[in-house]
Amino acid sequence: MSRYRNDDAQRYADIFKALSNPYRVKIFMRLASCCIEASPCGSDGQICECVGTLGKDLGIAGSTVSHHIKELNRSGLVKIKRHGQRTECSVDLSVIDLLLEFFKLAEPV
Image (cartoon, rainbow, N blue to C red; front, side, top):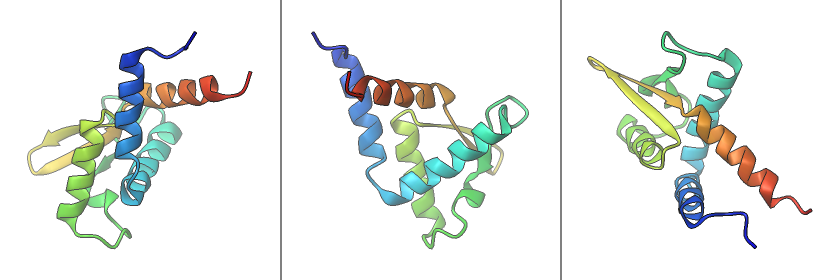
């Protein structure tokens, strides 16, 4: 019997689809490392980086960074919070737990 529910399978598919782009992986890894190291980060325990900061050194336009963050948000990997002209992003820490659980379940028994 499978240990995965159908809704879990769809959630994992959405996450891995969002992470199928190397720029999104880089952005996600930057956010994840800052959130995990800062633990908790930001004033509300989640906010880590502004969109402008996340795009540094990626060699892509700011609008492209925004698009990638939007896709990460759509998949549930990243939370977005707007403060006037600033857009702050953070990793949903429950997604880190979900991914850890996925890879734990994928290990051979």
